[in-house]
Image (cartoon, one colour):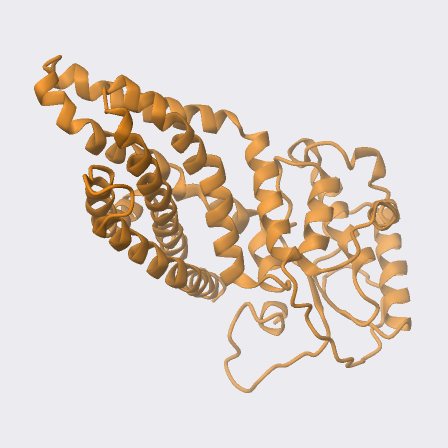
Length: 377
């Protein structure tokens, strides 16, 4: 029922509408274990357009006595501590918001339960609404109210999601090293397998870089949305100002910044190793810039479909590799163009990228929404 009211599951009949902002705290806490509780809370506030001043964050953290461990990575915290951090979001919520709380007392000690009761009662008395499902005593009595609420139309939540993903990527920066090593190894294996014959190797230099970039960029996409679904962050996104479409685009940008951009920086070194002529570097780098962004958008589509279908790497490969063929062909031909940097093949590559940029967020959002609905049902 709570997920249906929140719009995360379809109603069997009738319509449900709520003009107030919805704050949802479910079984999952919506916290990333790679970053601190303070960073989690600040990121959630930015996504929803709430106050992110240091005073507001400190007040929210102290409301559930979480200040002393707020700067530790969430993965080292106990179940009760993570729950208190999740509930600390309530202190940042507007006075007219609707709180949907699923077993809010679970994992809390008596002192924290009393704090939750007190905060919920104050919220109801101030004109807010509280709807809780619990088998424990919960003293809050919600006072019904419907107050108009208009979502802000700025880009702050979008950039906040990118910032959050980059923070998590920095905490897992060893994955970046593995990806770069994977990229180098793929390129190094071709000369070892083919031999040292320059007449054979030279024409294969550009295609080898493109194949290595394709495999390296797509290697981590099977986990792109998995952690957010498992942590409950996807529920928070769906109820925020950001929405699933912008969320998918933000994930694509942050993934390219942590995977595609390092590969692009490494490419001149690989081009030197493969004896690619210097005058061919500009078209190669520009084509690889556009192509890697297109491959990233394809990966977002595949990751969302695989996550929605609850399948893994095998489905990702079946979905993405055939669709990546046009990018691979146009990118390779544009990189080898003798007509300068701007060539017909580069234009075709740009057209494919523009099409993916328009479609990928919509397809990914629909896939995540359908997958979440089927899981809930």
